[in-house]
Structures are given as structure tokens and as C-alpha cells.
Image (cartoon, rainbow, N blue to C red):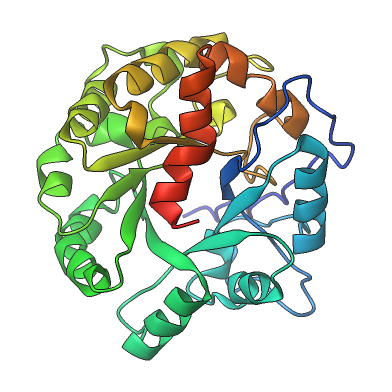
Length: 290
């Protein structure tokens, strides 16, 4: 049996963040980003991928350029359930932050309470066709465990491969947040089974959606015009349940964007100014407790 190739190190994010033409409103929130390092203090625990250095100071500097007021840090998979870097960022009070943690059965209630006190609002689970038989049956138990904290369950699902999982997700005791358009390829379109499942979730009023990482579902960089219909369909169905984020520092991205350019996609994605404020300010304030 041939050895699998080791993961390729991720490139660093573009350090020359461009000042966007579109000015974000006061209180705008980047609802999805990650930090990595400094690695001498926060070494990577597993190598699902090899991240580039992307410490909190660089993240805050990027936000100062694009004009973002708040942020949500999502625990990345290379750190596993060691949430130390996330906790340090939340403790720093250097920027208005909330967090999404990774937990497992070994995570104690005391650890959950500490994470909650620091500003964690949910936990994230990666869900694919390959791990679904193992992971899906555990979701009700995880939901019951985090319910007392008022947390939500954030999923990175392969919706095209799991087009019938909406009934299970809607039965959970906590709200669900779906990352990155459910990983539905933009080329498959709104009518695809995977995206139709997302719309069923949207109609429930109990599911939130992150309008993030268009480069994960589209090859039409840098403007990703084929993603715009997905955005419009989610906003039409669930305008009170959509949030936006950069996905900085863009781990495993096939195209490394400039974060200023991502901000400038917003007027095309959300032409109505009132709705844009809802997605950027009001919805994340409700979801994350700002």
C-alpha cells in the first residue's frame, strides 16, 4: 500500500490588506475566522493540514484595515480540542470577540463553563460522508450537553453527500449554524439536492448560515459570480439567520483572497442596505451575544 503524501503547508494570508471601497457599518462582525500561533506558545496538535502563522495581532490588524468592529474566532482542526490559543485570544480583550470551540467526550463540564465564561457561544463539528455514520448519532448527545449554556452547534457539512440530514438537524435541542454554504458547489446551483436541503433548514427558522469562503465552493475567482445566486436564495429564505465572515487566514483555500476584496463583494451579494446591516450587525449580535 502506497504511503499517502504529507499535507502541504498552507500559504500565509495576504499581509497587504486592501482598504475596501465599501465601508462596513459600525458594529459589523466578521463571524468566521481562525488564528494560528505563535507556534512556540500554541503548537499544532495534529496535521490535518499545516497552517501558516496567523496570530491574533495580525488578525486585529486586518480588521483595522477593513473596518470591522467585532469578530468570531472558530477553533481550527489542527489544534483539535486544545482550545488554548482561542482562550488566550478571548482573555486578551484586544478586540471584541466571541469564540466557537472544539470539544469531545473528554471535555469536562468545568472546561465548558470556562469556555462559556470567556465568550464561547458554540462548538464546531466537521461532518462528511465518510464520518457521518460515526458522527451523526452523536449529535443529539452533544446538543443536550451544550443546551444548558445556550450554545449552538456549528457544522461544516458536505451537504451534497448528505442531502437528507435536515430531519436529524431539526430534531436537535439547540440551533444549528452551517458553514461555507454547506460546501455545495456553486456550479451545482440552487436547485441541487444539497442546496435544497439547506433551504429546508432555512425555512425552519432554527438554522443559521455563514456567507463565507466563496473560494471553497467556486472556481470563479476573484469575484465568484456563481456564488451570488446561493447568497440571494439564503437571504430570501432566511434574512434573519444569515451572517458574514472572512474565513481569515483562509486555510486550505484554492485561491488566496485579499480580505478587502471580500468586503467589496458585499454590495453585489446584498444590494439592499437595510438587509446588509442586518447580516453584518444585527444577526451576529443576536447569534453571538454581542
